[in-house]
Figure (cartoon, rainbow, N blue to C red):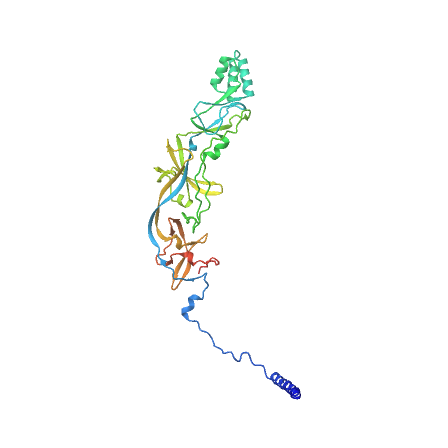
Length: 403
C-alpha cells in the first residue's frame, strides 16, 4: 500500500503540468466577438418633447386657465396717523441777543396761550442802549429819536421803549411772548415731531415697478410708525445764550390737524388730489368718516421711498398720535388679468408658463400692478392657455430660460 501511494503522486503532477501547457497555447478570445451591433437607434417623434432641458420647457398636467379681460374696482387699505398741521406752525424767536434769565417752558407739548410769557432775556447791549436813551431824555429831540431807533433795531418794541421813558428805569430783562395758541415744542425736537408718517408701504417688485402691490412676499419691512407725542423735558436751560432772531420754540395749533396715510408708489400713481375715501380709528371702527386727499407728497425716510397722502382736518375729534386705517377705492382701466399664482416675478420681468402642445414653456409678459391677488397684464394674451400655478413648475436649483 505504501508503494502504490508513491507511484500515483508523480502521475498526478505530470497530468496537471500537461493541462497547464495546453491552456497557455490557446489564443485569447476577441472581446467584441460576443457583442451584437444593434445598428442606429431611431428616436420616436412622440418622445421629442422630452429631449429639451427642464429650464426651457416642462411636461405638466397641471390645470391651465385663460386671462380675464375687463375693468376692475378694488379697495386697498392704507395705514395712517394723526399729526400736527405744519401749515399752522408758529415760530417763537428772541428779538434780542443775550442770556436767558428766566424760562417758563418746562416740557415739550406744553399748552400755551397767545401773549403768554415764554422767557426773559438779559441783553448787555440793550441795557446800554436804554441807559443812553435815558441820558438823552431831555436833550436834542433828534438825538433822542436816534436812540429810540437804535433800541428798535436791537429788538425792543415801541411800547417797551415808552415804558422805559415813563418809568426812567432800565429794563434788564426783555420778555418773549407766545404769538399763538397751541402746544409749544422746542425747535430741536420740532423737526422729527412735525412730520409723523404712518407705517410705510414701500415699492413692490414687479415687471415694471408697479406690480407687487399687495404682495406680501415682495414687500420689504415697513418703516416704524411715529409714536404719540411725549412730554419730554426741554433741553433749553436758563443761563444759555441766544442770538437775535434765533428761533427757539415752535407752537402748533391743535384746532387743525392732519391725517397722514402712507401709500405704496403703485397705489399713489392711481390717486390724485381730491379723491375721496373712508377712514376710521384703528382701535374703533365705529368712527368711520369720509375724507378727500389734500396733498400727495413723496417722502424718503429711514432709507425707504414711499408716498404720503394728507387729509386736512378742521376741529377734528382726533388726538395727535392716534393710528388710522383707510379704505381707498381704486378703479383700474380695461386690461387682462391673471391670478397672482400664475405669474412668476424674476425681479425686472415677469414670466408665465404658456401651454404649447403637451408641454408648457416660459414666456415673458409686460405686467402692471398686483392687487387683491390679481396681476394686470398689459398685452393681449386672450388666446393663451397658461398654467394656473406657476410655482409648481419652477425648479429651485435652475434658472428659467426663455425661448
